[in-house]
Length: 582
Image 1: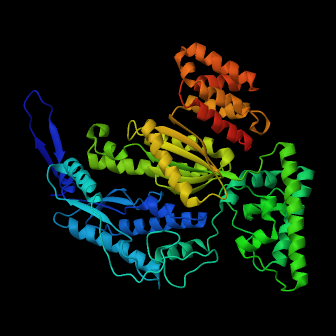
Image 2: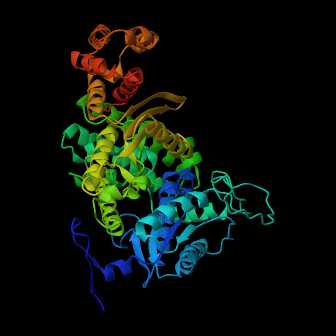
Image 3: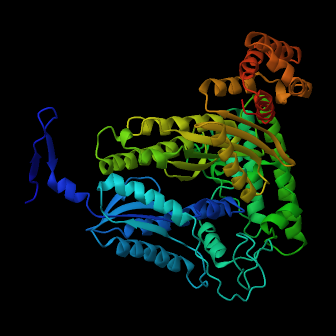
């Protein structure tokens, strides 16, 4: 009978226990956990931001297919619904009727394969992608026991690889992924030879116009120009827009768009509206070089004659001059400066899988019901993180935000504050549902010309270092064009981050702090550590002031000296100050 109540009388010294038998039956079923592995590697196999965002979108489609295969009488557990607002997770937990778990798991895997076949179109299939790993645990001991057994089985399943060695007529390896054979006749403008997987990425990325690294790096600079009413800046910016229009008219389809970001403001003056949408690279004077534009963008004159070439040269000359004057004027007026550096932000929940298996954290709530609440909290976290990062305040772009993990690109000047806001969003969303839940953070600053594939891989490695240092941990690294310059790793500490921000603001113009301070502090670290806390702080502050740092900055550095990585913090702050992150 639906909704019947089963009453069990306990001994006199124990409380009466009332169980709803229909709720108990709901928990009886095969527990199915299915996952699409290798997501981070797949997303990292990207040379351009378009590849990065396309990779994330493709994984989201495959994950949506995985989720959509769970139909009644089966039921979703994690996520608890298809309509939570966040991106579809690449791991799905479901309950199937008893004895039908394998059938459901195979249908989920099949749905992913069918989705990928549609995405492939006429491109040949690739053995080994996508893979769906799944485990099924029959009922016995309740949901909590099933969950524990499933986690052990899934860990074992991850150690098993699906080996398929079909014969391949291979001449080249895919330039983008480096692990599948390239298809014949797929050479791109830049000499790449692509596999079917890479072709799907490129097809997905081409029509959308994802913002480039330059567009993200230049966002605060362009936003300031859009909002200014200073007559000198407006006049100079209008000359710059005129040069863009002239280049557009003289060239044969040069990409001048692709710079729009969700948080970009509207133009205060109509004549500057183009700055909102423009490709950010044109803000840099060096971009306005005819040979560079030919090499990077395939620049050709609309009129294939001497007059057409003269028109291109004239447009580039005017654009370079306008970009140079505008950059100088903005710096003179103290508006956000143009920097060729941006940041990749990576966050990942700390041991969330372990926490989900800890019944004590459910505080008496049935574990399946608690898991559903965790799912909703993670969806909220992902949405709040996206809202913050893509706001006018931070002008970033999220690649993916699933609640328990995040990848985003941000301008240099907003990255640290955005990372802190994202951390706070996760804490706020999960505090009442998963006590003690936290995320570790990696923030990697890199040049717009850096290999994006290397940058994302380095950021993931940096996140591992942050977690090794402490959970939650934070790692901030600077990747200059010549290699890593500094890397500060610390347990997450709001006061330490405050001191780092103070340190950035305390640097002289252009970050002109004597390098001898860092050299001396690094050389004398052992001696300084031998001093007691008060003497060490006083000595570090004395040296900082002697080298031209403000008193507030010297005090911030002195407080940071309690951690042995404070010299790295100083170098990170020096870089940020030099690039205008104030």
